[in-house]
Length: 533
Image 1 (spheres, rainbow, N blue to C red):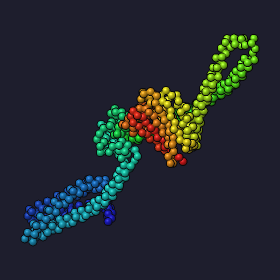
Image 2: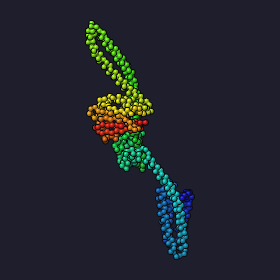
Image 3: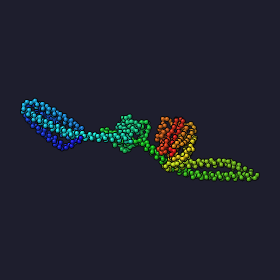
Image 4: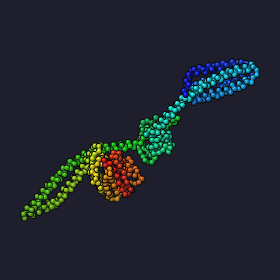
């Protein structure tokens, strides 16, 4: 069904013509000498609502139609309907009077009045039909607008529900008024349980002063609207979040619209990048130091070898001298040996040279381990590396950390030799786990402990176990061990990044697994599982 086309100027002209004709007819009949009082009274009674009808049409209905004001249109139509009903009732009464008159002239006169009022009624009905068409068109337009509004509302609701950022609206008192699906997922709580509570329940630092300051006129600058906060889930877990705020008005009430993003992963990546940059800088420094140490160490080693050879020559010379000395010279040789303590020198010097040589070799091993530890990170591609050699190098590097706390036991499988991996990152994992094992043994305070390192092949998996006899991990914190920044170590000794980064390296970069078994007071075993291929 199509709505009628409204020619407003023509409608106004038609209404004005009808109103003019009605007034002329009314003046004619009111000036006629109608017999009896009843027709005159009823004529007045029918005339008044008609005047009201036309007055409402011109002063209320048409202006409301111009404004497309549905509320005013409904109100004016209600008034026009009431006026029409009053006019119709007066006409019905006039008909009854006309039907009871017996005098022909009076009946004729009243019949003329009836015809006139019926003409007016026809005009009014015509106007109602015209206005009804207008209302029908308005109704159809409003219906289409309502459908568009419903569609827009549905789209906005879908966006509000599916946007990945948490969106929370808060009133001036800090009470939560709305809480979208993303916010439910971020804070681990359904909206029905949080709406009406205070926003302070979601953040570590109280925001009363901040919100009060934010709502003040002129205080909502960029620095106020964008900030990083420590938020807390309903599980009690703290996490870093980015908060963006802006004000909005709903029915003259001022609200804050808070957009929250969980930036834990961003922080993790940032810390990994920072850690990598630090390690790169340390690696470059260590590589330079290793080179500077290695050169003089080689000189010392070469000189010790030459010194040992020279000592052997001196020792041979002494033996031959003593054997060739006659009875006259032998007492002199013995006297000189005693004078310069030659017997002790000949006995102790080889031991001293041998121990010095061991020290040089140890320095060389440490330098080589440092060079390998720093050099293997130069490529971002997987490399083929000897797993056991890598573990031995890590043990050399962190020997100073565990040497007073633990003994190392190795159970290396002969079935494992070369593996494909990112050597630098994997070495960091081994280093973190061995250092943590040493710290756990120290924390237990029961003397020297054991750190056992096992390698084994299981089907298509290479497994490395690092087991300690330390204090173990309490059951209530085991699920938090791999969380970024979680640590049980005192300030200055632990940052809470080692295990989180290790988990990322094994799981994300090597497509492997990292997990542990632990009992408080009995120790911990970490399992590293890497794809064999």
